[in-house]
Amino acid sequence: MILYLILIVLFKLIINKYFTHITDNHSLFRSFFCFFISTLSLFNSVLNWNNLITNPIGYTYLSTIINKLMFSYMLVDTTYFLFSNNIRVELIFHHIICIILYGLFYNKIILSFGACAEILSAFNWIGILYPNIEWVNKLFRLYAIVFIRLFIWTYSMIFMLKYTYYNYLAILFSVIFICLDCYWVSIILKNYYKHKSFIKKKLFHMPVKLLKINLLNLLKIKA
Image 1 (tube, rainbow, N blue to C red):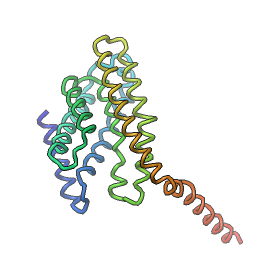
Image 2 (cartoon, rainbow, N blue to C red):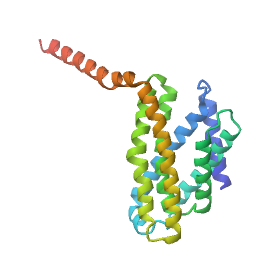
Image 3 (cartoon, helix red, strand yellow):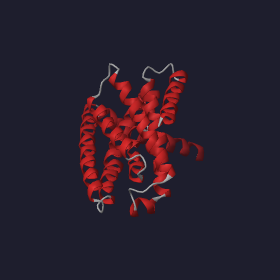
Image 4 (cartoon, rainbow, N blue to C red):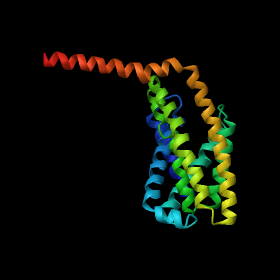
């Protein structure tokens, strides 16, 4: 585990070094890591889909790497939030649960599948590097919770049905994660209604305007 902790810390230091112009470069580090781990987790889940269905508490080399990386990341991220001015209680609670799970069951393939859920923060870098289009990331987070994370929590429970002890844990923690997701959805929707007119303008008016301009240009060329 120490090697994985060192890798995560080194990655954070690299982000801090090359993105000094970004005020919140820790969020950038979080987003880049979540993009990497969710992509790796998706690849592993597709590659070992049969094992995931037939033996979700089984072991694969790649799933162990993913789980150890997740454990190390959650530990580093929790430590940062505990000693920062920006304390997010719900996120620390989420991370502590993940530290327990990935620490105890670091060799289970089902947990590497669960790492796909980190896609929620995978595109936060868009809002950090390009604040004027942050609304795109907010909408993506909403869709990620509804269409991806809910699927992951539901199927995690289904995969574990035949394992009495593990199934109870899967149900308990899946319900906790679903409740946390509901809380994050409420925040996103609150921001949506606050900036509803702005988002509608970006989603509908801008594309229509661009389409009209392109059609006019096309007609001019033909003429």
